[in-house]
Image (cartoon, rainbow, N blue to C red; front, top):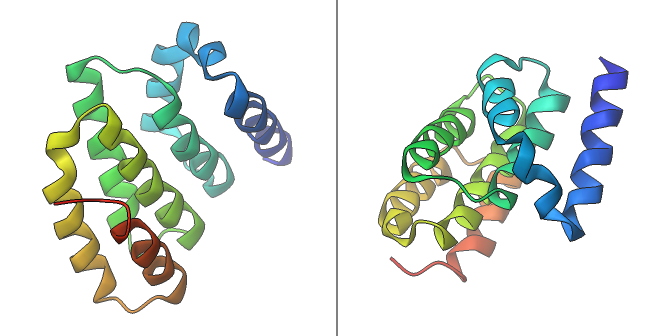
Length: 129
């Protein structure tokens, strides 16, 4: 588990400035998103999602996965915050999802979790409905 986390962390750090490195691995990333259970891997996968240019169909799958991670009340708060941030970042690929994201943030804000509420406040300044 620690090796997976370190590898995912390295990939995440490398692709901050070189997102094109992920392009040939789109399908593997999608597959990992379906099977990953370790929170350390999931939070890094969430960070990678907006760095890939997805097809319309893939984007629907990615969006739903991120939404599920965000709404998972039993899940890691880091995963939830990273998934929420990634959904906001993915609006550049699909701006029509802005109102859905705003609704989701309203729903999440009711949970009154400081880390999630702080991210929501930051995102609300940037996202227009």
